[in-house]
Length: 556
Image (cartoon, rainbow, N blue to C red; front, side, top):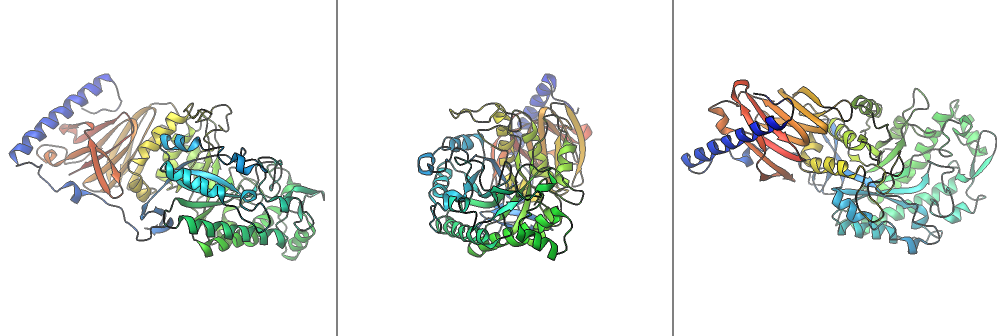
């Protein structure tokens, strides 16, 4: 008998079969002196390749780039926290504004927080540095067993202006730069209007100052974190663009300052978007990241606005283009996608958006996505991480819901609401086998199963490294199935039934089959329970039920 769909009768039958199989196994253990026939669990394990380099870094594994942390493959399961309540002129007073989010992040099952660090906080006076907030974030993360991804916010391009939006909590560049537009020239739009809140990166003084500040930032990280390795990666800037959020206005597609106009003509450019991407990448971001890498070579990455302004361009804002940045910035590990989608988005919508970011050496990642009540984030996570090998998945933000308002994961009193339980289920399941998922992601040895549309029941069959696997689920259940060796399966997921076909699933071969619930501790499998499963000998089928988030290992 097969179990294509869950239900009360199927549940009863599975439980009875599982108990019968357990009784038979117990009798066999007695007859064989205390162990089942076959090799030991340790001998059966398909371990992942370890690294002697304990710093966060990327390694090439069978032609794929894999993030390693503490010597093992890793995926950052994060959510971002905001920056607006860190108020310019009152940074010391507001330092602890987001402290309540750290215990909430730990309880949600995150392994990291994405934390913005504003340049204006790091360099309050020219050449004088203050790393109080960096140290505070690191201390809070370690207290709550979290890693950190730090976002270097020297430039923020999702509002009016890029170096500040207002003069309270939205100050990004230091005030000595904001107040001195003679030394630090401003960008000029296509009508010849200078924008006080948008600095020009075609003049050396601002680049020299930011390079110096970023170098000092990385020197401090190396000094305080080289041993503890709490800080995993650095996001450099936020949604790079020229003037800000008005992305459809062609007069804002490049800087028209005298220096920019001269260089635009000298280099023979005719396309404003191409010029902006080339100039930002080759002169600004390259120099910032090179300075940081010379000090302490953590992985650096960029995040781009979801969308498209030109057929040739991958990036949703003037100044963005994946291929151009990867070519001109050798120390950029990847360019992530900030992808916000309607609640009804399909799996094909996810795949289409991520596939567009498979450019040159880029590794698609989700650096921002829905943080509301919709099922987008937990469904997108399985696709991004399992099928595309995304090194980071991070909705924005913990206490602010977007794109739908008033549906945050965490309320002001620290309690969970709205989409938090669904994200916790997703992250809890992935965490039970994270090194293995990270290692096999994007290969034929790993397949992702979920409904095409949210909220629908589904049943689909796929070939997983030569094995036939069927998964049936409902209520946004989903599964990842890994088949690393001919005699081993690893199943991760929830609210679904998984059926495996193999010639071993018949008497007497079935005596050698082990079915265990547990989790991976690095490269070691830790058994922690008995799963709900049964074997249909007539069909050579082993079926397991994953009601709550769990990992199940099948081997013989």
